[in-house]
Length: 340
Image (cartoon, rainbow, N blue to C red; front, side):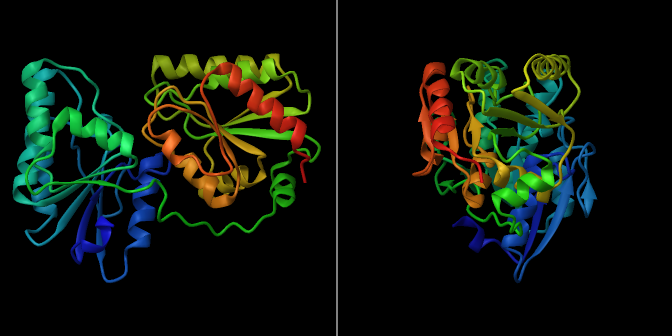
């Protein structure tokens, strides 16, 4: 694993606010590998870090990290392009160039949670490729993501491109049984509970809420309930439209229930423990932190076959290839499962 080779002091860069799943991942990584190390947490203004906050998305701002990280330190960057790359082409190009220069001056590991969009002209793509090849190490969560990254950027000499399973260091303190979890959440014991949980977003990955709602109707099983739990990840017209559609589905069908609001880590795990199955019918995704936590908590996953999700599926999960198979999978679950 790449984490064992990290230096005694590590500058960890992410969006650390409580409403960001990538920030949660970063904190769990620091907690799992903190013995003998100091993690200096640098966040962004929308999601501040514990130790420092920097506005890293405007031009060459990544170079400020040279002040946070000494020459003997490692820098671990949890990458979502929205955190660090914004604005018009000149600003984006300057941002990528600054990340590349940082990689030349410090030992940088980039954990690629979300890929860069295929936007910009040839010059921007050339600078982007140069910047990605300057990192000492790039960590991805699936063979599929590794192959995609290598095809787009290549791998520089002495650069590592490493696959680390999503959630390999996850832990939970929850000891509820399914029945106890349902009682505490106010869920019925005589229904088959399907769960989609996480931040409500229209961004990549496309989580396929509409696919799940349509499959629920097509399954024709009155005992099924689909619970959608989460809050908008950020304000945007597309996200507003998504939330409005979920509210409408909740109002129109007694089998669809939207629980709109932020949940803490313990409640997040309790929802997963309470469910008969977690749904990840995504249209695009490199991997899923929700699926990783479902495996940790012993709840099966019904997942689509896109991106790295097939690799992530466990022996008790069901991989579906289209909407017909999704409906059949949840119909079969309703027929076989008797809630505790």
